Picture 1 (cartoon, helix red, strand yellow):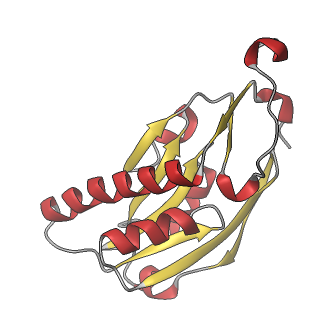
Picture 2 (cartoon, rainbow, N blue to C red):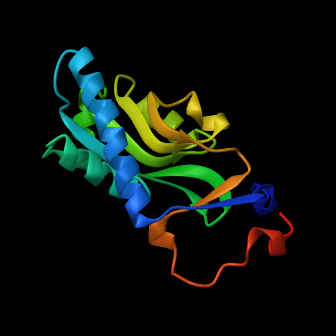
Length: 169
């Protein structure tokens, strides 16, 4: 189990930012489909964090085939051994060819390693990537430092936040 204290920075993401970055991801993936010989067969969201960006991408690319790859590896800020909970059988049968796999974040890259093993020809994409995971995805929007904890909007409630100077940052 990794030490939760390795996160020295907080990066809160609002619903508006997630939507805007999800749409930016769709723009990049639209361009990649044009250069790779055709439209995507569908999108696979990695549960749970990848579901929101996968739905945004599916909407923007007008993809009606949406499936999930269920993988669990986090308990809040502690990352453990990844466990597969559900596989997208149709995409696995195609070895992932023509499929998009979308997640919110590539942190250590362990989740994307599993996705690549299951579907070696799929296109792997995420909204945010850290240095340890960035090389394992084909497309991402924003790189953040490895010591940053991203607070996604589905994990947050609006409340008071101390100024940076008061936190000793």
